[in-house]
Image (tube, rainbow, N blue to C red; front, side):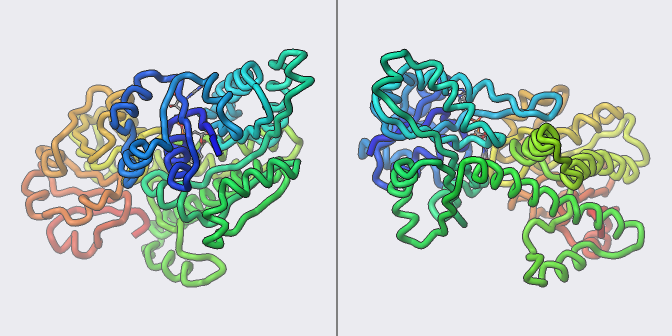
Length: 436
Ligand code: NAD
């Protein structure tokens, strides 16, 4: 089977490469010619563990190719995945202009039956909208001879473990309103069916909503434990122990119960806002989600206050920040708590030294007037506090004596709770975690 994936970013590239692993012929399309040129030269434009090897292997055996020629990709494919951005607008709604453009292009170039699949995270009703745009863009004679199905197949991969998540997912969700599309998508995912990955086959609206409900629920869990952590600080309880004991209850589970600076990244912030927005448009308030969005923004501000308290005010201070990506094992800094916290620290008069193993190139487009350092120790040098903002493995076993010797003041603000408060204090640090 020939398929194409339009949009070769974090989701599109992983999707394309992994479908090629399943034995399918995949064309990945992007409008960014420099990205396609990099991929054609064997350079992976993002940091995603395990991806480079698969891309190399599948390019070598001819199953995976890259192009900017969207027309021939569509015309040679039975299934066309859409994996373009769906960024937020200022009012929280989703900007569907990238999706609309692709839909129009598909309508203009359609040359036979196609299954068009939205892999991007899109509000309920988008598949219907896509179908309308495709049909409108088709010529009269194309409309008479060609048909297309529009299906929803939301993606649940996590950056940093995207390849494993795609090849061994918890579930596959497919929303489609016709049997032919369902059969083709079942076929496409057959290798996962064979390893007994659960399939949820449903209508398009339900599939579209499953993605938002899942992300909003995870964001709620994170926010819940953050607010419990804030209470722990007020009553001298330890959130680490609270979360552990809660997580031992099988109904709750221990995942996503780690207190910290608030959720971030390219998905949770925009998806929670989008859900609240399109639900409101339907006349249904999402009060929990709206509160989660507000509490998450407040959590970032609280972290800045915490840092300020630890150094007796930020004006004129130098703060070292370890970690810029929104989580470890990715170079993605979109809506990263670390980046926003740095901007707030700067607004309060602090100078910033910072380091991230993979995220510094991307962060350079978002941060100005910061000193990018070579490693954790360089970051600590001359700083009045070291802030641990992202829990990369290499920050878990720092030589603390060396860190302390480099710092101007022995202050560590551990926003990911990776160090033990008692041990840190015993080593002579003024230490603050989150909720401990
Ligand atoms: P991305 O920004 O990394 O990649 C999108 C790509 O689409 C870019 O390379 C861009 O150049 C390309 N593009 C835009 N318009 C195009 C067009 N008309 N033709 C061809 N290419 C075009 O985005 P992403 O992180 O991969 O996210 C894509 C979608 O998947 C979003 O809706 C997102 O919410 C969703 N999603 C993301 C993740 C994640 O972890 N990143 C996980 C699940 C779902």
